[in-house]
Image (cartoon, rainbow, N blue to C red; front, side, top):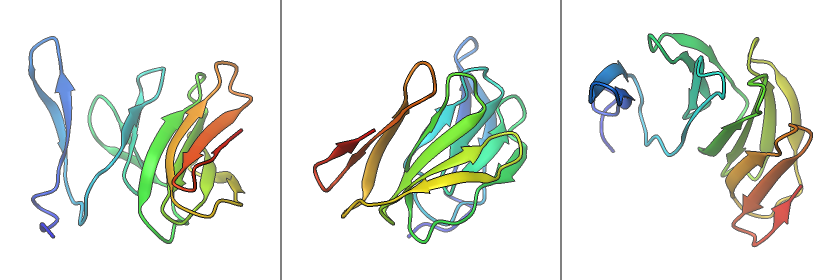
Length: 133
């Protein structure tokens, strides 16, 4: 496993073709990254929320017992959904980093999460071969 100083998340500025920010300090693989629709936040890894302009940490969303595999923002950027190898989907308030709920009942890892356009539904896909709303 690489050391924490070698695992990075790069925020690229496509207009100039260069990295805008490089986020450091990870001790394991980063398997998912998502921008909030308003462009202000980036969610990744355990789940950390960072300022997309500066890379500065906004908050770390805690509670998982295994790796986070996927993240998604609601269209209004107020909620974050994340899935994990711990067989849960969690909903978070992106402004304060507090949990808004945990969705359980899966029998294997969560591989994908997505919000509906009206942010009233979350879809999740699992290794247990189910999609749940």
